[in-house]
Image 1 (cartoon, one colour):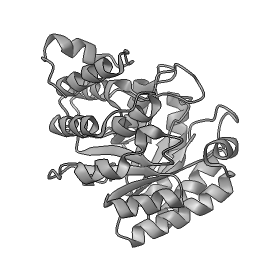
Image 2 (cartoon, one colour; image 1 turned 120 degrees about the vertical axis):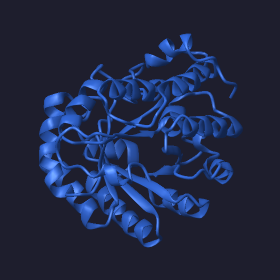
Image 3 (cartoon, one colour; image 1 turned 180 degrees about the horizontal axis):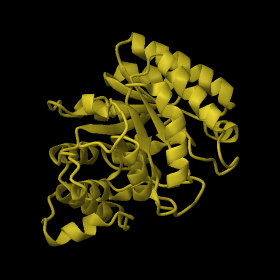
Length: 316
């Protein structure tokens, strides 16, 4: 599942190696109005794996009428190449989604809920406490079924409706995730409200409750602080970060806002710091440029524009 690796365990101090979890085929594609055909998705995922990305979130099990871009989740998962060392995962938000994930044959899932009561009501149709109860039951069931489970907290760094989230609430949710057997915890900056002081403060509060369990961050670049926040998290010992090719994705509360940290940008930054990722940012950049051609629009990442001078395009 995302980030499940020995080096994923955090212990303070800047890590020598970082795991980049590619979420573009899920978080990126679902924000676009154009639907990517299944065979093209499969090709993109294969190329990302060939570029060194060993953990890729490929789909979300949501209602196809609400998110038609993910309607082919089962078909895609059946068709994915089984490459040694590559872990595919899917996002699930409710019990029905988990049912579908378990039937699909995927072996890793992310179970996600919001720390914000207002956001939870709007996004999941239920208050935070009800979503937490449901999520914990889903973790129990998925773990019992032998799936690798990442449990994530949306709006961990702030909510567009409620502002800053109480740190105690994030800590409590994290502790309960750990108690219910999640293999990894992730904190998501859903609205891109995080800043280095906020990141450092929240990690200082949460890390004592995760122990040696991997803790990942899902950072957004909404306000241009994505890589800055990544640097702050590195100093706290975090070694797992979600990224998306070309910086695809977005913020549903800020139309037109930048989305995830671009995979190729993060890989390049980490390379300059001497931190290993195993990711060839040039090859990722080639895929990013091809997706810009497919969607007929530019994406906010930067390095894929630079690599255009050095890496001839491959056909999808």
